[in-house]
Every structure is written in C-alpha cells, then in structure tokens.
Length: 288
Image (cartoon, rainbow, N blue to C red; front, side):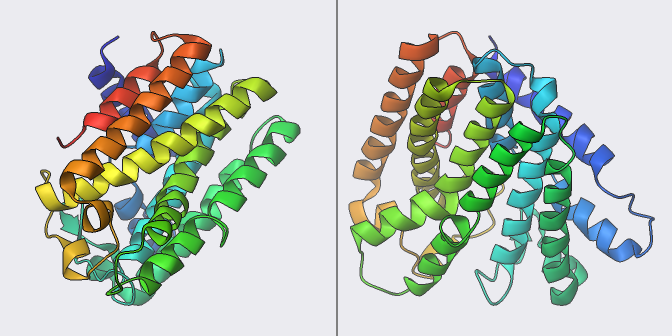
C-alpha cells in the first residue's frame, strides 16, 4: 500500500464531504458560513478523520460508512484550533499558513465560528442510521472533548505556562488536550466498522499510545521546524512540552517507543498489512 497516496486520497475525500456537509457560504448570515468553511476546509492533514476511516477498515467495515462521523470529528478539531488561536489563548495570528480565523473575521465571529462548527459536528453525529452506534459515538466523543478530555487539557495547559517543568502535569496535558480526541477518533471508527469488545479494547489502547506519540512529535516539530510553521509560539509562551521536560533526544526516544508499542499491538490483532499500521509508522516519523 502507498500510504502517502492513501493519506492524500482520503484527505481529499474528507474535504469533498466537508464541502457537502457545511452550509453554503452564501447562505444568510453568510459571514459565519464563510468563516466556518475558511476554518474547516483549509488544507490540514486530516489525521483524526483518516484515523477514524482506517480504524473502520481495520475491523472489516467500509470507510464510506464512517465518512460523516469522520467529517464531524474534523469540525471539532477545527473549532478547537480557532479557539486556541484567540488572543486570550495562544494568540496565534496564522494557522496553516493563512491568517487565523480571528485575524480574518474578528474575534467575535471567530468565537461564534468555533461554536458553530462544534454544534454542526453534533448535528452530523445525529444523522447516523444506526441509533445504537450513534449513542456510543456520542458518548465517546462528548467525553473526549469535555472537561475530562480536551477542554480539561487546555485548561491545565494554560495554567502551566511559565511554570517549572512538571512531568505528571505534562502527561495530563498531552493525553487530554490532544490524545483524547485522537483516541476517540479511532474508537469511533471501530464502532462504525462493527468491531467487537475485544477489538474496541485493543484500539482504545492503540489510540492512547498514538495520541500521546502524535503530540510529542508535535512538540519536537515546534522546535525543529516544519514547512508552514510561522513561529515557535510554544517556546515564546513558555509552554510545558516534552522537549522542555526531557530534551529533544529523549522526547524522540519516547515517541518512538510509543509508536513501537502501537504497531506491535496492531500486528498482534490484524497484521502489518492494514492502513492503520502504516499510518502509525508515518505519524511517528513525521518531521524528523
């Protein structure tokens, strides 16, 4: 399998469906619909929705059955980025090489755009044909982005700025702010693919491993650089990161160990010839 082609093909599939699921930009009030599209269809890697599709395929499902949920997950991610970029939060002027939503449309519209994307995501979740699956996915996603997950991680991240390095707090931030939604994306794909309890348990453990690895690699990229990065905002704001606590070399080793554990788990259950296995190796090696 050409995993880069798989990523490109499915990222386009996500974008095409986001275009279909989001309100037209000329629909009144048009400014909010333009801002939603500006923020959601903007060339991101689509890692979370693609992990959802890949997990669905891994347990024997059809990825077409997971597309709407995958798109909803991407809308949640887009909402979180809009709010992260606000002056009251990370105060980033650029996102993926373009002006952040609040720089393009103003802070008030940016806040409402994030709210609108989150709301629209749950509208899409409600459209599934299988009520039992819908309820499971709503439970998983709601918990993952609540104060017990993504929001809680964001709160602790903000409170930890300019504080002394603290390994347990760092672990909490990364597993909640980033890892929780990544793990929930994998679990949603498993549910939609008809995976059983053993498969869901295995992919939950996998999702926890890859979610943490993903954020550690992001921390490294913030320092070593990647095309499209505008500035090192984490260093400027004295954010709590893995390199700040462990250094670059140890952070790379930790990410590598997590990826290895994740691939071993996948191999034990499904073998190496799955898109999820190859995606895992790619995630662990991006940027370095």
